[in-house]
Image 1 (tube, rainbow, N blue to C red):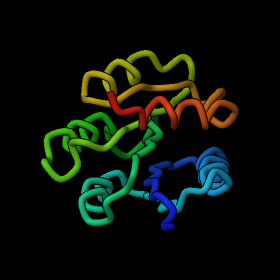
Image 2: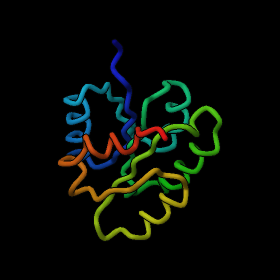
Image 3: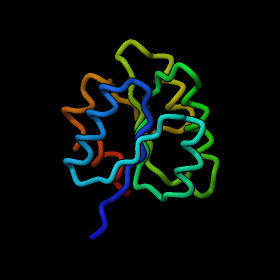
Length: 124
């Protein structure tokens, strides 16, 4: 059976690689995305199971990319999990308004990743 693909956007190396490694431990193939502008293209072309994005990007607004993912017929169905620091309330609100399924604090993401994945992939 083919492993599901997760696209992971991050700029900060340590939490991003830890997240990628944890996803691989859970049986996912992981494609790291270092440029948020290419996230939409990669999501449309590679057909991932989900997208996880660090909302605290220095070079761009991740919420705009989340909105574009939601507006694109090829990617609108994808579960999107955003993460950032616990004091980044503005970024959390922007991501949720743009269409992220939910946003979690970076500090709890790794410890509770299986539960977050289950929640994101839950089909009603």
